[in-house]
Image 1: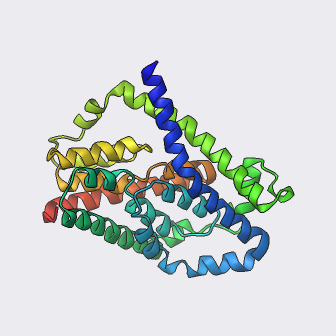
Image 2: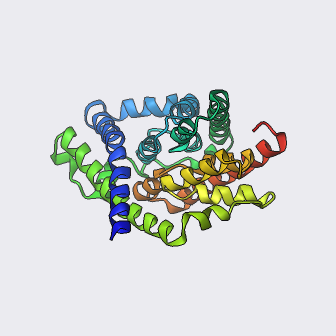
Image 3: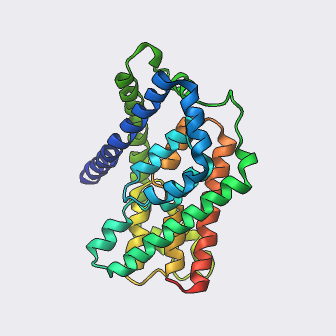
Length: 287
């Protein structure tokens, strides 16, 4: 019973941190849709060339809420796939709080954050420039209207505030249920066993670390960062795992964006970027 209570409490706390991010995101999206029309949303999309730069910088905030908000913005056609990936790669969930609590050298912390931001920006810009045609979505594909239809929220009949709140409640409940399942699975497997998957495995260590990082739960970033702090995990494997760790952003992507094929492509690029950059970091010895 104590374990179940702890899991429920952890799930509630995880979801509570998402509420302000999601509510503000949906409030902005509803405002753009109801008040400014298609003209403004077109301007936002056209101004997205520097989106990965801002995404990489803002994504480094130590909360997974920003990646969750980014998934909704992508589903609403307000940011590019490069910007989305930049945010996913930059976000670090529980990494920064753990590094600070363990009194890691501030210069090393800044170095890790700087590397994450730089790699996120470069990757996002490259994806937008090189792979843009793959992700060019037709006009009739998902937008704020189809998000509302998908959620059956009848937003057109409500105020902007109520519509945003309605979307937020739907998503938070969804994440709450998924979080319970994930926390139960992690407890069943055991954190020690999960940690052991990525230890002392040449080259494949980056691949396994990135795979653990893909788990949409704060436990992944906690495990990876703690192993690095304890000197068990090398810098390349640590970065591979943390770059691939987008928190609950991936869950919301699959919930809000109905093109499963493109969602899987995004997840594949996220994982691939984490592994490749992790290997390069390990080979270069910069961490």
